[in-house]
Amino acid sequence: GAVVSQHPSRVICKSGTSVKIECRSLDFQATTMFWYRQFPKQSLMLMATSNEGSKATYEQGVEKDKFLINHASLTLSTLTVTSAHPEDSSFYICSARERDLRSNTGELFFGEGSRLTVL
Amino acid sequence: QQQVKQSPQSLIVQKGGISIINCAYENTAFDYFPWYQQFPGKGPALLIAIRPDVSEKKEGRFTISFNKSAKQFSLHIMDSQPGDSATYFCAASKGGTGRRALTFGSGTRLQVQP
Image (cartoon, rainbow over all chains, first blue to last red):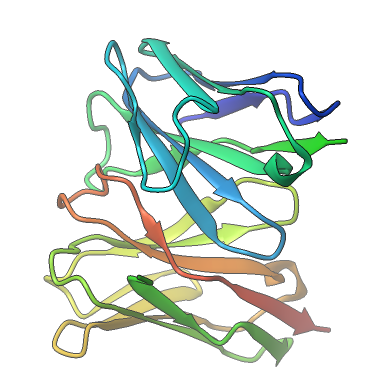
């Protein structure tokens, strides 16, 4: 099946610094990628929808100036957490949708997630 | 507003037993209902999905039952195994093929005891 790769898988940073997380579709082109955040023992909450070549669409309550999303190519989207604070510590997961459907279900493929810890 | 409600929050099943997880949705525009399995520290992986034009779908030990009138769907895991111990999420989206973003349920932590 299709593979979505996230990097880094774990990152620890100091409060006030910025952290970039990459999401790559390895064997398909993704016109749309979704970024989710998951706190411990909780569900995945959609943060934003990233469309290649255009501005991301953010969900209500998500600060677009804090969580910068760039989708510069059909295989790469990045999430930058700017001026990170301890409350931003979470598990960030991306998912990607294929440009051309190869399966009838139109499956979204998820990355392995990136664990951010802000000290 | 919680659009997809999932229960139970946690579930303990003996090996070989049947695990049943239920979800209910509110938005009648949803037309794609997948179930995901997530192990600690990993991203979710698709288990099985269903569209509202069928009432049941089976893949191996996993079965989705769908009740459109009640706006409910459930996951049945037959012959549950310790390796099935994970968190399970139901989800829903609109757009016919899961192209839109998924709305997830709150998750069910399943523990299968040997």
